[in-house]
Length: 424
Ligand SMILES: *Cc1c(COP(=O)(O)O)cnc(C)c1O
Image (cartoon, rainbow, N blue to C red; front, side):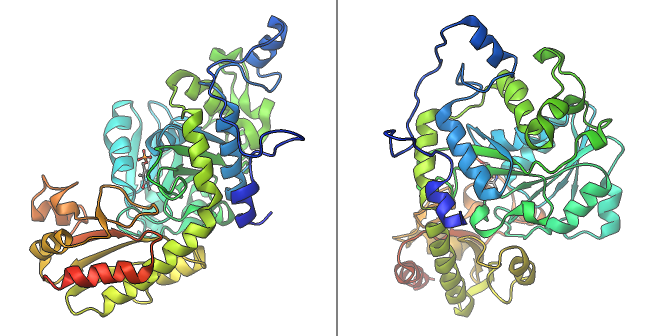
């Protein structure tokens, strides 16, 4: 199946006489005829369902569809993108360990790593994604367990050099984890460039309709855990909390990482999505490839319009030839990047605030990456407690407007922007 077909037909395949659409198995538990049968499930000796916190058929079918789209070997859904980012790292790193992360990542992920996970004893070194090879090499420590980056960073729109970071990670015997939320597997498949694990906030394009918060972790199945068994005792030594199972030997490279994540991390932390939400996510996934094409077409038109406008000071969009990341985006995302643009008006912060007041189609929202066009002025909303100097220090210019192109008619979106610019 090609990507467009997987969006519609991937994951759940109905058998003769079964429901055409993925059924919502809204049940906490599953019934068995004998205790022996259920015992085999607890021992991970047979596959099946017993309790939805660990596994649920609706959730698993959607995870399978996302794994197919990414070209991975196994996947697990989580209740949010934040949970996916946390699980992806925590599954292989614990107190006393260290992780190298790109500094160009979503603010929520940065805070999770830099504040919350540090409190758990996991150390992080943040590197500029465009740093020299030497600087990148220096960031690694003997206790480094993973490298983390974001395909197209939210909101800076920096395109991550996946191949270069994968090479550095592998030279140090650790996997590369990539947050592929903005590109989606329709525009970029990080595994083809050497990434080992992919995470998603499915809340964005995958759901695509402002309906459900969710996340996903996908494993490529390619990282050889046993080849680096001193670094990954959680996968390569018996898990005493699970009858002494050794995930890497019992499940192999293809399934070890996700099986451990389900059997141990999800069992204990319990951030599962409700089957109802997974059903809604699946409907969103059915049209993902069609929507991504439209998001990119619209964003390209809007970015080109903005670039030519006198009142606009600058535009950042990796699809623009003038963009710093145009060439890198062509390599990793030849069919388009995403629908999110950022730009600044010549009149600065005041002009940005005035401009936004007059938009009618683009809605002011803290959300991005869905069917509805939405817009945000970080300096007066998400970052409003910061001074202009502090804003600049964290890469958010006071005049910056983050504009997420939906799937409406591009001429209506441009008309809306044109109308609001007249007030400046
Ligand atoms: C939104 C977002 C997240 C966090 O996802 P939630 O579903 O909001 O928890 C993580 N990474 C990226 C790139 C995001 O845009």
